[in-house]
Length: 101
Image 1 (cartoon, rainbow, N blue to C red):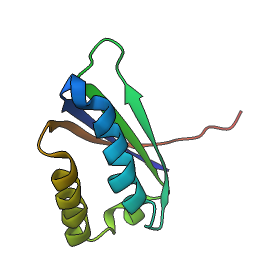
Image 2: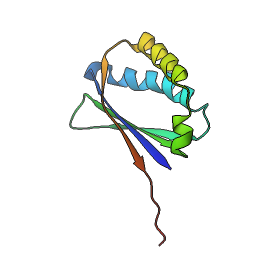
Image 3: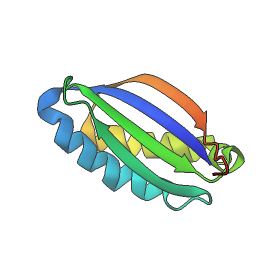
């Protein structure tokens, strides 16, 4: 499994709306692609501007196979729905390793 970590800065008053729009637009769109396993939203209780999304993918190849044009179209749709009240601060990738007990 591969983890995509996205950390955003969002205006605090708009945070809940941002999370809702992300679920409606991004999560719904990504769920249609092979390899998408799910998504979590992490809220920092000490920083009301920070929102982290943890997206789980079966393989890196499936994640990276999403056409760039599709990603751009989804982002355009999201920006039209929410505006530019957010900033991507970090994009990272992690591999999940399981160990035998």
